[in-house]
Length: 135
Image 1 (cartoon, rainbow, N blue to C red):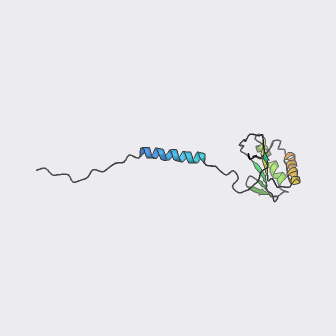
Image 2: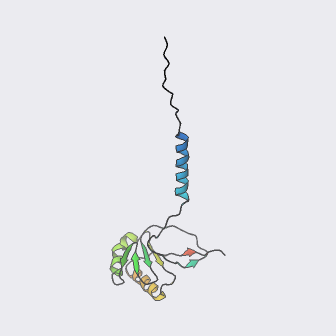
Image 3: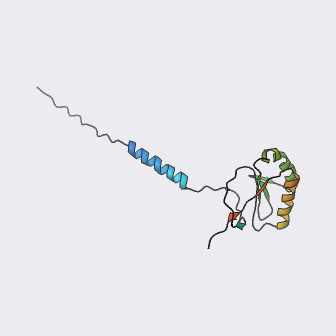
């Protein structure tokens, strides 16, 4: 006598190709998304035309419109700025110090800080701007 096997065969779904598609979508969104360069500080940089955009890594000196000064994310007093710049001068020598001042910052303050940078031994100062918007 022959008994029937009542167990059902399970359906197997091959998801290998679906995983490939998911990875491709993930890579596409990572590459096409924009990253915030300065998450904590809102600056309106001066606009220029005629220069290529170049991405530079390193120390960045921010001057906000209210006159507060930041070295990367460290807030500095104006009086402490010269000694802090002298500390980082050997590290900055090759790449340079990136200088970002808000468009509405007092011109005299910008010139004073540029003078302090020069006196601290930093010879390469990179002044950041943003490209002019085409109208």
